[in-house]
Length: 334
Image (cartoon, rainbow, N blue to C red; front, side, top):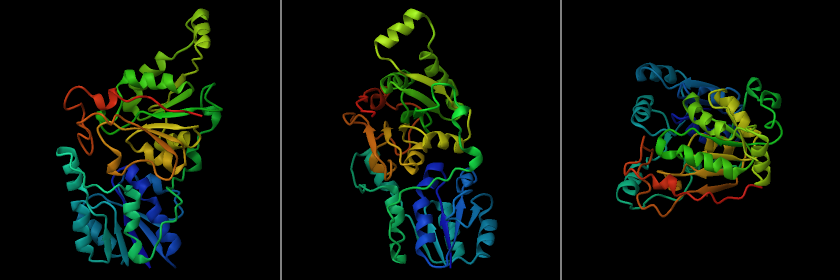
């Protein structure tokens, strides 16, 4: 038997799809599992033992159709549910199951604040597609397999970050999913531990502003004052210095992870980390929250315009950005 899993476009959606891939491989007899992946996410499956072969979702749909037809799949699980994937399925004409679209429900919630969304995780909705195949969720959570070459060694990090640290992932696809910089500094101060900032090169300047704020060694009096106030925050700006697998390795070794509604939520979930998630313009009902791991939610439920989008904006549509500015940093870090 051959099965094809069409994964989502983002890193996060691809990590969320790993329980589906694992369940197919483990619970079906003599099955060969293939994945259809966005080019930017194929690296995630390099070491995945449950996936036998990867194909790239790129270029001409006709060429892709011809390539996939040769595989003669017995079952296709479509986790993208977009127009291109539906056209591809029509052309392949194989037995398939497609993740239902919730866009109209998200539109009602965003624009009219009418809630018809199911209180269920995106992964559970994906796994529901496997029920007709008599495949049950195994409750093992998400998978992320880091290649040995990308495993971060402690001596790669500065002194003070080699034994225990907290990761703060600065990346988010839209500005309204991120804290303003002054509030990021406030959060790091509240964490009061060694903090490693991770993100892409686009986040490096923000990381530099934060790390400079917490630089030590200004004077003996300054240092004595910090000790008296029990201030322990030191910050290493790792944004843009590591590839994604290496950032995942930092997450794997962290004491805890702070992250926005971003790809790092499923990554931290895969390693069963304690997650402190910060939600602004989006909400948990969209189904992209931490999965099968301990987590706390930091958000402001008193802001009436939330959610303002199912994805996010480059700036607050109303200009006040209360969804992020009004978050209370009320958490306990053991």
